[in-house]
Amino acid sequence: MFDFLSQKFSSLFSSLESSKKLTEHNIQETLHSVEQALLEADVPYGVVQTFIAAVKMDVVGQKITGALKPAEQLMMIVEQKIVEFLGGSDAAFSFSFPLTVMVMGLQGSGKTTTIGKLAYKIKKDAEKNNTVRRILVGSVDFYRPAAIDQLEVLAKQVGISFYRAQSNDPVMAAKEIMFFGRENGHDVVLLDTAGRLHIDNSMLQELQEIDALLRPSHKILVLDAMTGQESLAVAKAFDDTIGFQGAILTKMDSDTRGGAAFAFRFVLKKPIVFVGEGEKVTDLNVFYPDRAAERMLGMGDIRSLLERAEEKVSAAEHEKAEQALKSGAFTLQDFADQMAMMNKIGSLSQLLKYMPGMGLNISSEMIQRGEVELIRFRAIISSMTLKERLNTTILNNSRMQRIAQGAGVAVADVTKLLKRFEEAKQYVKI
Ligand SMILES: Nc1nc2c(ncn2[C@@H]2O[C@H](COP(=O)(O)OP(=O)(O)OP(=O)(O)O)[C@@H](O)[C@H]2O)c(=O)[nH]1
Ligand SMILES: [Mg+2]
Image (cartoon, rainbow, N blue to C red; front, side, top):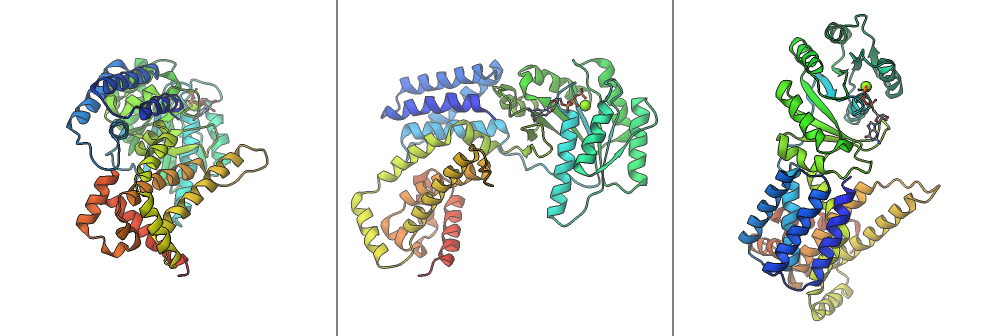
C-alpha cells in the first residue's frame, strides 16, 4: 500500500536531513518535490495544490522548538497533513446489527470477493467477542454468467449461508433475499449487486430501486485502486445518485500508485473503511490514516532523525545514567534499551518471513506499530532530564508538558510511555 509514495518521500526527506538548516529556498524545493511526487502518484492536481497550501500554512505558523530540527519538523507537518487528508479525525467505522449491506461498484472492482472478506471479518470479530452472527449473502448480479456461483463458492468457503433467488429481476431478487434473511433469523445480510464496465444510468437506476425498496442499513462502494483518478469520478456518480457511507478500496496490494486512495477522503468527504490487499478472504484490513501516513514517509528515515535527537543527550549524562543502572534499579533507560532490542528482533522476523519455510507469525503491521512507538518513546526519553529518567515519580503536569513539547509529541504519548514502563517494571525483578 502506498509503496510508490513511500519510496519517493523517503529519498526526499533523507536528502533534506543532510542539509543542516531549513531555508526559504530548501523549504520551497522540498515542497515542490512533495508536489511532484503526489502528481506522479496520480493524485488529482487540485487536491495536490490544496495539500501543499495546507502544509505551507502550517510551516509558517509553526514555532521551531525542542529536540527536533527544522527539517524534522517539516517532515512531521507533512505527515500530519497526510493523516488529515486520509481521514485522520474520522471516528473508527463500525457496523451496527442487525446489518444489511448493499455492496456496489463497477464490474471487476472486487465486489464479490469483498463480500466474502466482509463476511469472514464479521464472523471472526463475532467469535472474538463470544457471539455468533447469522450471516447471509445473496447476489442480484444477473448480467455476468457465473457471478452468483462465485458468491456461493465463497459462502461455502467462509462457512456462512447463501440464498439463490428464484426471480431473475434484480429488484425482485433483492426483495426475496432480504425476506429469506428475515424469515430465517439472519442478523447480517450482504447483498452483491451487478457492476458495469462504466457508470451507466440503467445500473444506477437499478441500484436506486433496490435501495428504495430495501433501505439497507449500509451502502458500501467498492473501488478498484488500480483505476486511478477515474475511480473518483465513479465515486462521485454513485454518491450523487445513490449515496454511500464509506468505501472499500481493493487491490491495494497491487502496484497502484495510490493517488486515488490519497485523494478519496478529501474529494468525497467520506471514509475509506477497509482496504483489500489480496485475493483471499483474510485480505481485508481496517484502514488507519495515521499508519498509512507513517508508512508513506518511510519509517527508517523518521527513526534515524530521532536517533540523532537522542544523541543530543550528553555523554556525561549517559555516564551518570550508567552508574545509576549499576546500582540495580530498573530505569527508563533500561526500558528504552529493552525496547530497542525487541525492535531488532521484530525486523529479523520480518526478514525471516521472506525465507521459505520460515512462516513466523509476526505481521509486518505489528512490527511497524512497534517501530513507530519505539521512535516516539525514544524521543520522549531524550527530552527528559537525567533526574527524570531515574525517578519518574517526579513527573508532574508541567514537566510532562515540557517533555512532550521537546519530543514533538502529545502529553498522552508521554503518559502512555510511563504506563508501559510501569508494566514492564512488574516483569523485572529489582
Ligand atoms: N490482488 C487483489 N485482487 C483482488 C482484490 N479484490 C479482488 N481482487 C480480484 O479482482 C478480480 C475481480 O473481483 P470480483 O470480486 O469478481 O469483482 P466484482 O466487482 O464482483 O466483479 P463483477 O461481478 O464482474 O462485477 C478477481 O480476480 C479478484 O480475485 C484485492 O484486494 N487484491
Ligand atoms: Mg461479482
